[in-house]
Length: 387
Image (cartoon, rainbow, N blue to C red; front, side, top):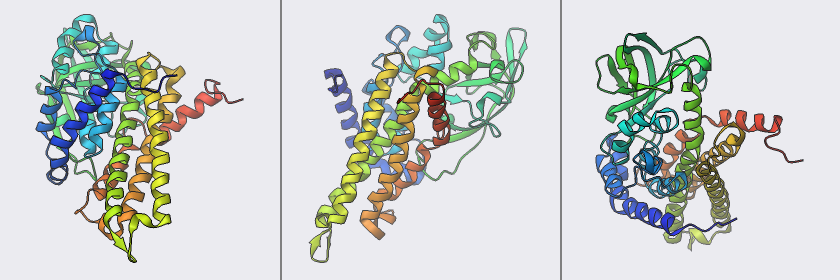
């Protein structure tokens, strides 16, 4: 087992690190306060060629893979977790087209996404159906050479800046088998952004609420055929990108720990540097143990995805990485803030932002509880065996 990064991996990591320090870090506080989408972050990613890593070369992307994408996300999330989400969104709306689209559909949408010419958003969650996505209610009805889509989608990351939407809607009966996937023009008649959310954290990337009112979509925008691949495509997409959410957690935790450590090196209390107290040293040691464990889980999960191992048989590995890394980020952000005491609670320091941002990670793309359902199912079905 080789734990060393390749030259390509190191180049991608170092490129993202440079962008993180030069572009993202100086504006991290500002974009949180204004809750305005940072187009300059996106432009930096585009100029560096970081937007096509989750899209195969044959489909117009750079095809580097999910592990390199995780490396880039980890670097930028050290300073601003929303920047990591922006890189996640280079894959999330596009993987359904990778998995379920025809060659013609892939060439129609993916090259422009890979170069940053267009942005997408992933529309699965509904007001009454978050984790219970198999029972979604948005409906697509055939009308000649078009479909009419009616329904609502909520908490759609990047929805207000998207050019196209990957929308999951019901074309058949109840349950997962009745769901299909469509690519929808975000500005088409009948597609409405009803509102955006005033969020606790990750405020730089807006989440939108969409309503679809007789939105007409060409039948050629149906991915994979009616009721054939829709729900499965959604699950494969979420599985394959779970490591990227974990990478956001790893990066956030690294950023929080690094900031608190430098503060503790300089701050004096009781005539000593804060870092000289054993109680504080042990807190940092615990942070390091958890960060290293999480990083190894995330890298392994990303490696598995790049080997094509993201179906139900391997899903528990991806869920373990996502659950542990995101929960770890919350613990480390908590402890890093505690090191600073009252100062950490103030907006003068980035730790209160890290603390708020971390909380999102345990909810998005499958809650920690959903990950445990996947993990325990694998144990019961003997896909994960310890005896």
